[in-house]
Image (cartoon, rainbow, N blue to C red; front, side):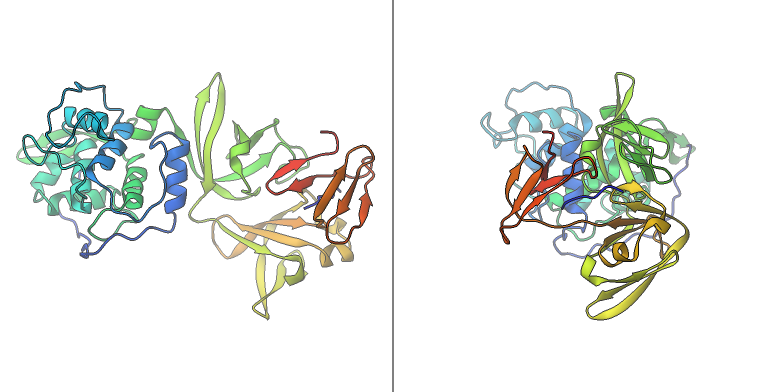
Length: 400
C-alpha cells in the first residue's frame, strides 16, 4: 500500500406565488460556488460573490455575456451613459436587443439598483415566456408566478437584487428550455424547444447532474485500475482536465460541466451535488470502524454512523480491501466518508494514513526531508513507498 505525506409543456394558468418580503436579498449558501462556476465557464467573466445590490449597468454586463448579445451601434443614446462609462458597450448592446430599455427615452439610470421583480421580468421575456406572464397578470405578479414555476427563483428571496442573487438567477436560467409562443384561442401557452438552453446553445457546454465520480487516473471505486492521465470518470463518461476537480473525492456525487474539444470531453467545472454529504474525521477523533459502522468523537461525545453494506474502501487514494488494514492502521488513520445520495449511509470510505512533517528542507539527492519543528531528518526508500511532499497547496516528488 502506498503511503502519503501530508417537451413539450403547456404552462398552467393558476399557480401559488411566493410572497417576497420587502428586504434586501441575502447571499445564498452556495453563492461562492455560483460565482466560481460562472467565472470558470466564462458565462460571467470575473463573477464574485457579493451581497451588494446590483446596478442596472452591472446587470447589463451579466445579460450581454449570458445572451451573447450582438455588437451594437455604439453611438450615444442615453444622456447619462457616456462613452467612458464602465458599462457603456454592454448597455448599448443589451438595449439594442430590447432585453433592457431605458427608464425614459434618453435616460438609462445605470447606477440605479434593481428589484427581484424587474430581473424576473427580464429573464422571463428572454426565455420566451413573456406572453404567458402577461396573461397571468403582467407585472409584477404574472412574471413572478411564471418565474417561480420554471425554476428561475430557486434559492432567491427578498425584494432588492444583490449581485450574488443576480448570479443565482443566471445559474437558474442556464438549463431552462427556451419557449416559443403558441396560442390556443385566447390562451397563450409555451411550447418548449427542448434542445435550446443558454448553457448548451450559447456556450456549447453540457452538464452531468448528480452523477458519481467512479474513477481517476490512480484508481477506481472497485479496483486499483484507474483511467487515463489527468482524467476522471463520471457516470461512465471519461472527462479530461481533471486538475479542475480540486479535492472532490472518489464516490462523490457531482455536477460536472464539460465541452467537446477535438473528440474529447473536457471538464470545465465540477462541484459537489446538493445531495452529497461528506464527513471528515481527524485521526485523533476516530474511535473505531468496521465494515458496517464507524464511531468517532464530536464535541467529546462518541457518535456512530452507518456504513453501506456495499461500501467501497479507498486507502490513501487507491481501492483497497479493508481486511488488509492492520490494527495499527485503524488507530492511525483519518477518514473521509462520502454519502453520495444523503440517505444516511456512507457508500465510500476514504482511509488516509500519513505522517505530517513541517518542512525545513527537502533533499532530493538522497530522498530525505528535515522537519522544521523537531530538526529531525527522515529518509525514505523510494523503492518501497510513493512519497509526496506537500508544500502548501502544491506538491513535489523526489523525481522532480
